[in-house]
Length: 144
Image 1 (cartoon, rainbow, N blue to C red):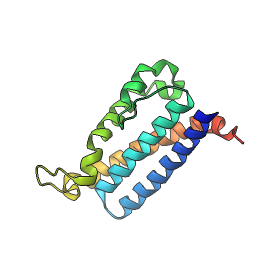
Image 2 (image 1 turned 180 degrees about the vertical axis):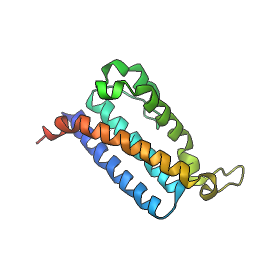
Image 3 (image 1 turned 90 degrees about the vertical axis):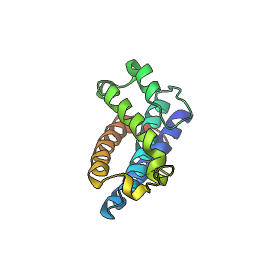
Image 4 (image 1 turned 90 degrees about the horizontal axis):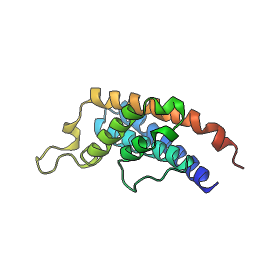
């Protein structure tokens, strides 16, 4: 029951991050779109893994756990596990630069990412969060 409660909370926060990403889209703030989208995906994937009682590393990149436990994932997600893992890993790797830029190179976050890339990331993340939400909804709704 604790895992499902935690999953519900993670999923709620994932949706909040996506709302913030949408606001950033409206403001043409590509780094914020990417950062909030990364956070949304991380929380949604961790909600999925937690609801399934799958241990994952306490890190931003949980792609290895997704792939290692692919056979335990629901069929609507397991068929896309590799693609999802690639996106999780990609976004985890640019999480810092989306916030701070590339400091060593002197490139601020605002110049490091294009709106086109941010929009593409947001669409992909929204799709995965929607699938994870729909998958976990029956389990989460069974909670008091």
